Image (cartoon, rainbow, N blue to C red):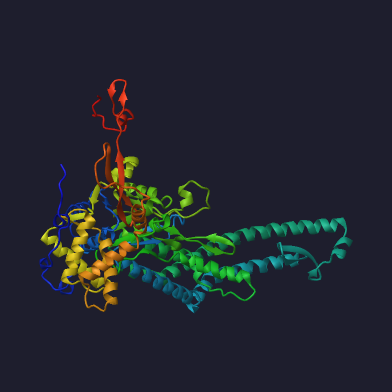
Length: 618
């Protein structure tokens, strides 16, 4: 049955009296999401449940304001949460290739880094002052004085014996030796060769006796020297410990509530005492002396191990962090290890470890667009593995892929507690649900953003408040009452239903921007209904060139359409051509032909499996 509709029935007008204002300037702007009760309910559930795997996929068409609205919604939720810990990487004194991860309360990471800088600098000055003091020199002299006297007495006694037996004690590059003497002076080689065999044999015998006695005394002195060296080392270590202990005792007391930090401070203190020599001298590079430059750089690098690499600083964060990652590359998400060139070679250490978005979102929320993460190499696989394992691992991408790489660091993993929100169109959701077995286990909550909302009085008022917010945020002219009514009618037209409003606020905002331009051109105070109409007409005019050409072809008879009379097996139809930014109808002729088959009338479409299976066969 064909029913003819009137113009009033086709277009439902919006009376301007619905709005209790003369313009949107009088309204209170509304932030947040409107008309998306289903999506908000899913978001609240997914973001508040603390079980693993309940990450959220926000599904909806582009232009519904998903990203902006969700970020605002999550920031309001995150403000009520506790601020997560700071994270630092510090040197591992047992295995330098595996830096330790230290978690400290928010804001304390910056304090710890500064405290370590001050402590190491103070330790350096204290050690330099101590080891150059007069008291230290006198203490070393006390330890070595008796031994030096004893060694001098031994060599004096050996020298006397040697002279009595016709030898002198002489120092050579290979050690101390006994040389035959004549008149108290070393015998020349010519004089020695003039001696008879018996004389030379007697000298050789005496020389061997003296040498054996020298070896015995040297062995005894070496044992005593080792004991003295050990005593000096113990003294140096004791002096170094005395110089720095009070500095680290103060720090350990300050961080006594953090066992990990206290253990780290003890390791630093012990390493400084063990390697106090690195603080004694401060070599300065001289022009044209590459070795001095290398020594200076080596000393700076040796002191680097006492630094604190503040990976995540939450000192300025209020509540839980909300991170929107617009470029989710592998390194941007999971961090990286930077390298620097030194004398033609690349090197790295724990101070060059940089955190990624997941590190900064740890304890809070990470928002990523699904199409962005799927198109970045290894990012999607890395995210799934990280969420599945519950820990953040910083590693080289080449190493993860199994390529041969140079030896690098293996930082200690950081525990992960984060909610990931993926934003994308429904197509990606159903594709991943079907093709990726991990997706269902990791993203158990779907928040579906509708492209339409009910056209109720409450929603109309919220719609006007959202328009007020857009005008304020973008410095547009505000809408008069009749312009609001025009926008509502256009919104229903976009929704394709008189009882609905479009939730594609990006399209509505474009109309407002263009209407504000035309109002500015007309020197009007507010955007009026005529400016809205002008914006809509101009938008169509910019895009309907093809429609105009089709109309011309119908007007000049190139496309023939019979609009009067009747014809058997023919009917006029309307095909819709969608150009992306503009859609229009094009008349088409639909024909049907019937032929007599061997068994009577047949449906050609059914036989070709193009028609419905229930079509009867005549």
